[in-house]
Image (cartoon, rainbow, N blue to C red):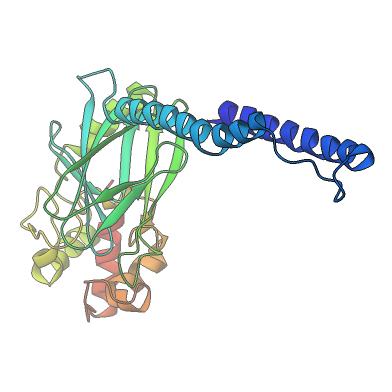
Length: 293
């Protein structure tokens, strides 16, 4: 498209210059009393080709090339790719690796140098999955699965964003794609697929008990415990995540405590209600959640 546009701009510019110089010559020596010669037949044909026929040909060619490229981008050459399912929720991203049995949230780990198939859907309103440095936008629609793929050529953390207005916390609908060397990615898969071990310290045991006996367990899952909620994100390895609330705030101890007590004060409109707990229980719960690596 760049080269076609460049040729068109140069061609039109040349015609403009030609027309300017021809008009000046005709005004200096024209027999016509108004100083302008009448259009010739070749000039009419030029207008017809340049204004109608030429653009139709150029746009038709670009349309065919665009369809070819879109088809290529939608179907990469490799069939045995890693598959990741991403579900847009209000307002966070559920991330599933169906072949590895992994469920996480707001972070997508991928191996460097390999195309990864992303299957997208939504459980409510329309979202749009966008990682500007890796791929274009793809809509996420309830009841429909849209497919795309992305590939990172270099290790790094690539920010993603919902690109379709989805409600009050659309701005804080952030996720991260973490591209890692193959060996590092495989270690991550092994860790994420495992359940959490029993707490080894008294404060962590108390934190797990607080989690399981309060509203937390009704909405969240932690594999290896009795908590099996499906409303909120899976928190099995929450301590290793970079942010809280889909990129709303960093995952720090103080912000996590504030989120547990009243998430609405940090991300108004999200589906997590305030959880009134004694201060000691809050600290034990934060200790426990931060230990889930």
